Image (cartoon, rainbow, N blue to C red; front, top):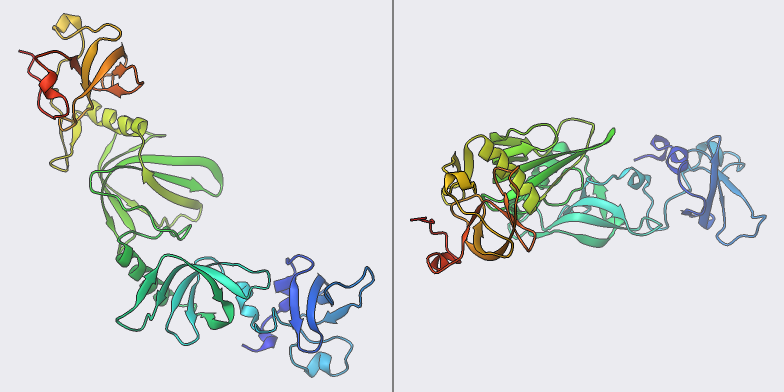
Length: 362
């Protein structure tokens, strides 16, 4: 690209004083500032009254006769890097090696002179069948790459990365989303540029749609806006809303999982891990109400407990308290965890430990 097409003063206007530059006439230079379109530089390590060297907005020497108007650009980022376009590189840009064998996703420069950079992903030998994929690359020579600025290449490259690692790329951080198994309880958090609020969804994961950058869920719950779960939801992981700052995915903790389980229970439904489906809920054990003939426990009684699903395993514990305000996850053991089902531990029930067998009160 011709130097007349690049306004170097605009590029350097926000760069800090001391930024290293290079001129084939003056050698190594440091930026002083940019004033009224004039780029002021000095030799590195100059005294408090340095010899100031000035360049035009397009990198031509000032006060050197016709050179100021007819001469070539004589100011560059570095001795071995004479391309001002690198200042336009942004995180997520697709860069191609000069021999067109390697393709990378630009992350950031790793040296002050921009001579090296790091990449989020890299495909080596991209134009062959023996291509190799890497999640991260460091200290890549800047002079060996250029920005292709091609939306088609960007889509193709990111698609190859997602297919290789079986997970979508977070289009805001350019890191891979976690690999989940079908039926995992996960949390999707959406943050915004114009608000401190974070929208949180607790979901039961089904699968990724890599082609459209989406996540399919058996059910989800918007924890901040509704107590009613939604069934068979699809979440776009590349939101078209410009105000979205980031979308992150992670595994749900016990409390978040309980929120969705309770919400499904209120709707008469539950997650069946064996069938991999949302099914109608059938209570296996009556609530702990003396009037209904169920058990009444005292502190430190030996009990067996399990979660909301019939496929959960029975665990032994010591009874702590009952939370009657909750219709699910109402029994607590002394370890501080809450469970849906709680039965006495005795000779008639000890065979249930570590199994998912149903409890027959008779």
